[in-house]
Length: 565
Ligand code: ARG
Image 1 (cartoon, rainbow, N blue to C red):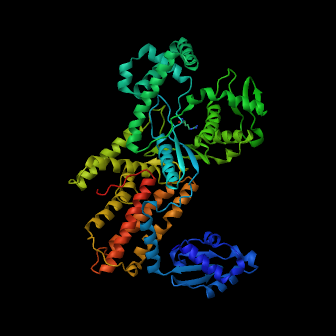
Image 2 (cartoon, protein in one colour):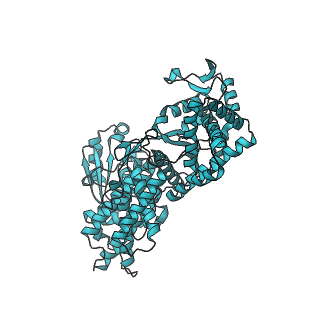
Image 3 (cartoon, rainbow, N blue to C red):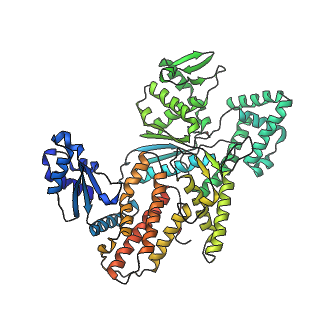
């Protein structure tokens, strides 16, 4: 039974003159902030205009008329109609729905036939994957999973930063001082060393800069030698990154990065010209955005070189043409707010209706135990090192708490990575994150390991329960602890929907922590394996639904849920 619809029907029976579809009334229902105010509330002011009656009058009339076997009571309070569902019915309906929908529970399938392109992680070639890229990678991964879960066709794009004069310099440095084997062995680190050396030596010998430029020109002109070195740099970087992606359980459908658009920009520039948007500015070509309170969008430099923005214009069009998306998301740090505002504005000025479907999913900075990170000052935390340390720490905790556990290595990996990811996805994405070891790896409180541990606890209870089961007595779930768990399970679909609509995985993260906390409270206060077979059966169903929903929530933020810890 869908309580919202059932309540909407009862409301309409009492005020047929409202003449609205039940689904519309159902959508108006709110969840009161405090359970004391009921399970659902109907804000009667929404009908006052149509009915030409005060909210209080409408609420009073409805309170007198509405009744149903599933409703324990209905109260009119200050223009709101508060509905109290019968506790046992509430538990029965919520649990039956969650358990019968199984691993589809929480999704309304509303994305069927629609496509979302998600640009995330988007790392830079020849640079190490540092923790600044953790948020984009994990927010993007979570959105990717959420969209898929809601039935969308999701396309994950790693828009590689693989274009720029620095690659010419790197080739020059490699040709002078590098050798293949060292770079193969040392990976990105070795490339970074070459780059640093280039800059040091270029101070003494400015001719080097020309050499770098010449190599970049050769890449641009498609010279085979230049391209082969450049592509090899890319392979080495991606091989390094792949290890981290594997550890995180992240993947992509496309690695089309900046260089992919080399031959796709000329038509875009031409189109801008035709549409009268391109202006000359000291030899450069720009789109004037002054009327929109923004600095000009730089399209071509005076030497004819294209820019990051030019590539993004070509990429946006390419994505639209290739995937026919209904939404296109860019999960990129807030430092690029202006860039994306300009990008979307130019697309709009070009007359593309779908510019509205583009969204910049912006997020805050990461610092580490109170210190901001700065490559220049040598304060960097590399993601693979961070994850490896987390896994080692988790391993230490396992050795101490459950030395007999099977498959310790894999479980330590899941917990360690889970702790870091959970921490990164816990707060509203626009907030800056300050990462602390002791907070992330804690097995208590609002952490990944705590939620995972709660899941393992529910698994363990279910393992101990015998299969033969009595008819569940849902009345045994009337206590506040069980009811709180039921209430959260009931809200799960709504939470996921909001998380998707607001591109806010933290809503799922927090939900998982709330549900874990509620379940633990229930676990401590009530005997799940009760002597009364009916109560026991009902509590086991609650345990099973909690386990499933926690597991699903963790999966949606990119975490595994080990069955034993
Ligand atoms: N590579 C860029 C960076 O690390 C992010 C690219 C984001 N995606 C895009 N289409 N601009 O800052």
